[in-house]
Amino acid sequence: MKRAIILVIDGLGAGALPDAHKYGDLPECNTLANVAKHSGGLNLPTLEKLGLGNIGKIQGVNPCEAPIASAGTMKEISRGKDTTTGHWELAGLILESPFRTYPEGFPQFLVNEFIKRSGCGQILGNYPASGTAIINELGDKHLKTGYPIIYTSADSVFQIACHVDAVALPALYKWCETARALLDENAKEHNVCRVIARPFEGESGNYKRISAARRDYSVKPPEPTILNKVEENNGTVIGIGKIEDIFVKSGITHAIHTGSNKQGLELTVKALAGDLGSEKDLVVYKEVKNPEISLIFNNLVDTDMLFGHRNDVTGFARALEEIDSYLEKILPLIKQDDILIITADHGCDPTVPGTDHTREKVPVLLYSPSLRAGNPGERETFADVASTVCEWLGLSYEGPGKSLISGKE
View 1 (spheres, one colour):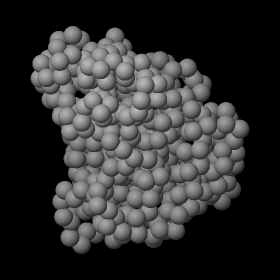
View 2: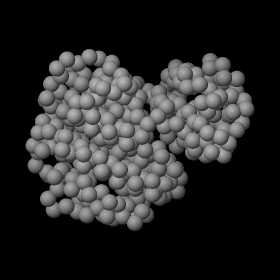
View 3: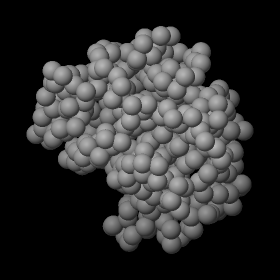
View 4: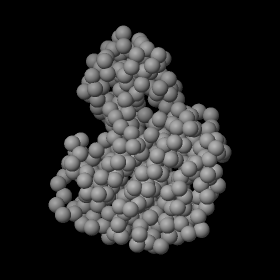
């Protein structure tokens, strides 16, 4: 059986793109290098062995003369710097028009219609904010009134935060579905990328978001991606973490949500070992009998959600080191007919002003015991991953990008 494994380290940019200024980002943005520098150096022996140190100066990660993987970088050509845009391009779908953002909050007619349809009474917030900051700012009032906290960011997101003691999770998810339907109806003018459920818990002054209960309600991909290609060819597509949400289940045969990078990495180990079927939270959308091809797609969100957006350099560094320690367990499970691609979806540099994503190129590492390590250099699009996966799995591919293996378009 041929398998392709894509590990997305969320927010791990590798240097500002030439058009970063158009997105309000500084040319000094470089999530990976800056985290390494500001944390006093990274300890990533497995990623160093794979060749990560060959893509540029990364304090603590040395260049490797004989890496076991091909290591390079990729530019993003889609319009945007958000999670959905990045993942869609990795899967072969280029976004020509950016999703809309709301630096002044959402227009009143959308808010009024949401209140009417949801029956929530009123809302709190409706402005761009850090998620951890706004729940501490408005959490007490929310608990008294039961009104949802609505907020956005520099990304195209409609976020709804509710304390689990004030609004039960099913009700919060239903409100998010209501918001998604409303925005979809007005998509021509209000093409919002994601509605995000942000449940939290705790007491006044110490509110904490519940990562495992977060849900993303994304716009459905307007065209098929390589996930659909694998599924249509009777292959297995396993989405780990928020992959199922990013692609709105399109092309997914099996999915399992995660509450942390550690859980996502452990599930990847189980998937590679063939033990994922024992997980009680695994959702099977389509039974695939004796598949000859398989795609395992995992998003590791902690680097972005917990540390990048919170300007937590130390936490970001420790998360990378945790990923590296699990890669030591993952690599022996990569067989001759497997290919492992480690990459990212955008930047989220915690060392620069602001708490939003940064418009950056991303690293890409390509490993298989049956491939000789090469130097892919700087690639023109994230879609090279899609082309590579299809070539590896023996599927036709007519989308953008060139294979990292053969260079074929």
